[in-house]
Image 1: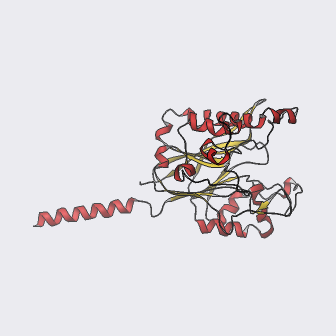
Image 2: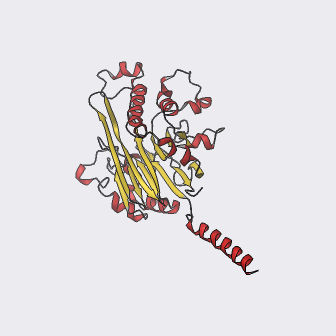
Image 3: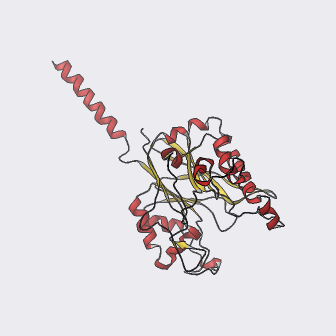
Length: 318
């Protein structure tokens, strides 16, 4: 009898111990293109932005367009010495509970920033190569250690225009689909200098996310483009040449989930390798009372952003 009781007690303790080793809640990623350093937040000291992020309780945030550029409520360039971001991201992130932050390669006004509850280690900051392989808004490759697991994070924001960067004749370049080809070059360069440098990356925990300024063939039942349309080139490269899975499409294969204010396009993506994808317990593009874009009187801007955030929860013990 004592042996049976001891065996049962050992089994119960093993179950309790195993449960105690698991994370209390999923690891939460919040990605968002916050439009010009959350321009909409400049008029209230970022209070609504901070409260929203706190309400979502993310462990890792990735922000595209993470630099202040314009004067509050105006389309007027702010003097560089008056720009709150990027220099004060540590201060802003601390307000929503993140101790750590880091910035991508920073070639222009549109860097990506990572903030986190966990230390961030940058492996590389990718600028591209002059003259014709410049990564226009830069790229970052960082790692975060969570529960003994290493997560690789690649942040992306590709060229936005219909013509190629530095095209001498913008109209001619647009006619030749120069912008589409330039974005495809950028993403190939980024992938070749991040995930492709690690032979067993497909078996590791990798995510890549950002504003790709391009649509995917996986949504082409919505767009109806020709198979050889150059607008599909950028995402085709990711789908055909990397082990990444398009998280939103994989989770919602029969739905079109727009990520921009005009509700016509999905150009923001979170990609994961299969080992990380398999740990996802929730993922969606978030349209709610705060995030739903409203066109502003400054006609090129929206409030709070022209893009929608993406939330992804990972059960790392799964």
